[in-house]
Length: 310
Image: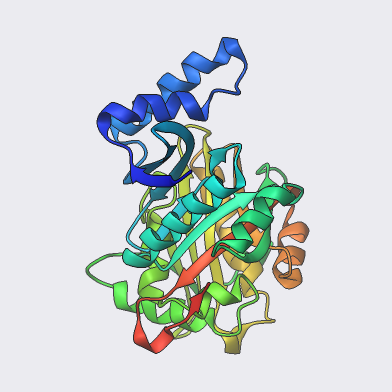
């Protein structure tokens, strides 16, 4: 027996989609398959690579690898009943990520999915961290910590202050407790482009906090229009100004902005080891929803931060 892995042709995508949803309830199988095919053809899933595994011509497995931007790839655990097939698909995914410009290829799984997690770890996608997903219902908000007349909120402008945002973003990565392995392996430019691809609003809700001639911290938020919520995709404070409440000030500003724009909630994901940030979020009214494990392949394309996690 010899397993071959290839990129699905247009003609093979329907067969692969049906294979993916073969175990779904019969009443839902057809609609799920059609929705997936529609997403591919409409471009809702950008740069999707559907990998198919065959043995003696028979389809035995499918993998889905999604390049959301130049720096980030997401993958689903392979759809197959055979371990050797899953390993072959994951190894092909790792090769494709290495040959791309992506600095990270990652998969999010429930912590208890140990078979999938062990398979990922054995084939180039080790456990990176766990992410705690939190939600704020936008009730009982206070402006108490924002009544500082010296605070200025500067919105991102591609032409006027891009470098200023990048410089501050690079500073906030220093000694960060939020996925430090990732921040240590990619530049601020990579990080910014990754955050840009999140959600539906590009950089419309990116803010820089400034006080008395000093840029203190940065808050990057995005919209999820379908759910009428905003997401905090990044919050960071420059190292020399940490411990002074600016993290809470940044988040509170984001909450008030979201409320002003008639959102139903603000969501975020935080490294479960980042107890300092979690304490801030909880004190501001965020509630933990669930936790997912991150398995990732990290490979920076920049010499000054060259590191490969394989």
